[in-house]
Image (tube, helix red, strand yellow):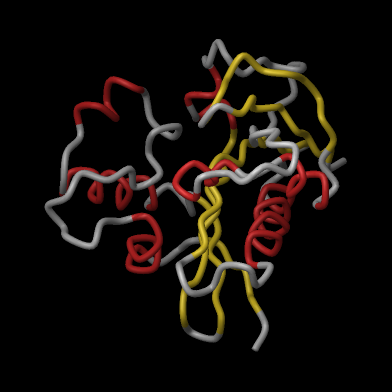
Length: 189
């Protein structure tokens, strides 16, 4: 069965990928780069899911991968200007283009190693292009082939982005799990 990547339009499917197993748990909900830091720190438990529902009313906050009817992956993609990357001092701006950012790629346990992250990244690029993005950026770790802890692998690896046609556009001052992050960009014009 093939993998289909579609805009994230169903809250229940987003919750399956980025929400908690228990509704009263404090988990990321993929909000840490999407909303201002103070708001992110202030939101707890069910408030976090309600924030995602509110953001969804403004359009899909990313893309989801499906195997048949089962949601198996998530990628966050949105205009950089509406994320914390707009003001992040550790991740540089290459130029003044209204680029989109991809900052989280997740694959459900039991489905890893099937190429879903590649499909998600391609789907995120297509979604950005379809919505008028002139370019898209990611900020993966440059792990040089070393193993990355799965909880920190959500930003992707340089190799993953290179395989999707991205090129290194800049170094960053950001480090995740001991690995430097690089700014990878793909022009969509």
